[in-house]
Image 1 (tube, one colour):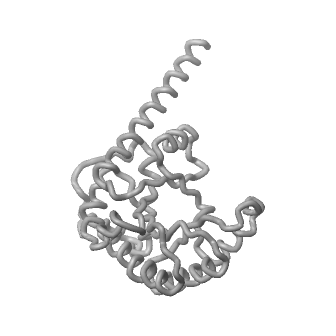
Image 2 (tube, helix red, strand yellow; image 1 turned 180 degrees about the vertical axis):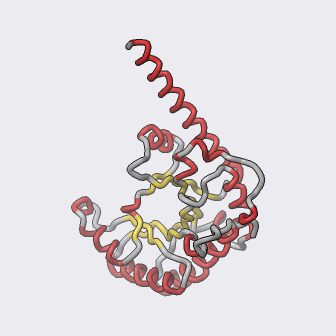
Image 3 (cartoon, helix red, strand yellow; image 1 turned 90 degrees about the vertical axis):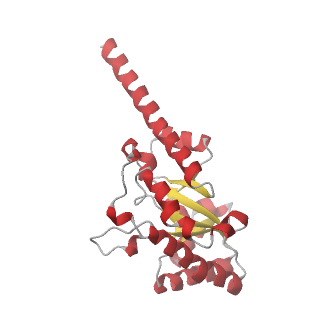
Length: 231
């Protein structure tokens, strides 16, 4: 029994070391390919404590779904929770979609933020609505989406409401799943956007939420680009 217990303990330690080595590789690749992007991690109920501890040590911001508002009702609920009694102005992210409807919903949230003096962390978007259900969205769609958010929300809303958007956050937790996707994101999307100089010199800051890539050691796959990754 003692030998079995020691074997299990050694196996667990080896697994933790291997997983942290993978996370370290992800962070190194992020710094190499996307030095102008701040990495974040989407915390879920499956997130292991040792991963959260390691990411904190590495100064990776942890993002919780409760801090992301998709509607005015979400913001109102955040302001009414008991935890907000000592912090009446919640720090929150506004989630948008890349569409005309998304612009209008985001406008409503900005109006609410302005009226209730909330503190805005920034705008979050993903590119799920770029797929038709059969072909996954390409990395190039991140270029289209980032520029759409900047031109249709960040700039006009700052002029209309006087609210500066501190950051634009790309939600890639489900789409960016392999290490090579980081280089693809730079090469086929962000490098091509005319906004990068603005991100590196002034607000808004550009952020990237990762989930699956940090969670799984199998996310370090390389190899040639899949056909659908080309713009």
